[in-house]
Image (cartoon, rainbow, N blue to C red; front, side):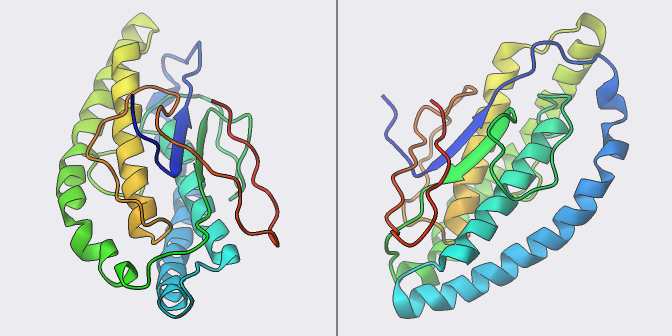
Length: 227
């Protein structure tokens, strides 16, 4: 049985995907790419601010945490729609919030406290082994669609064009590779001290992602994530 991890990444493939829409999605997602370019600049700035906050208080300011989780959510929805997975034809919403009925979702458990010492080294030194693996798997952490993922999605796209079917085995592997990438992104973004496992958890439903009850009594409860 897979051990739990405080980052949950779920995805569900659309039953009937268009055979040809993927040919033009690169045009359709241009507005999202423009917005995400600025959102990821914000992600980096927020992470730097959070680094100092954690170093002095051992806490990740909740508003900053929610913003960075929102950037990961937005990125995953766009990647899932476009060439990171081609798993849905439903256009991604322009929002940082969790969209309960969208087929690609991410949630991260808000930590009560974080290590003041780890915050100085985990985003670069400790994460280096994962960066090396992910450079081959997905090509990067922001809108990952290169590497092995890019090859698998291209194969799925060709099969979809000629057969109208997206092979389930390819889909499960693609989602598993993305799941690994987003766990590392959350760790490198200082949102958890739990070291990402070197494990490929495949399938649409995250077998290990567990989002705990919010330990911050002053914040709004997060929406539940279905199993």
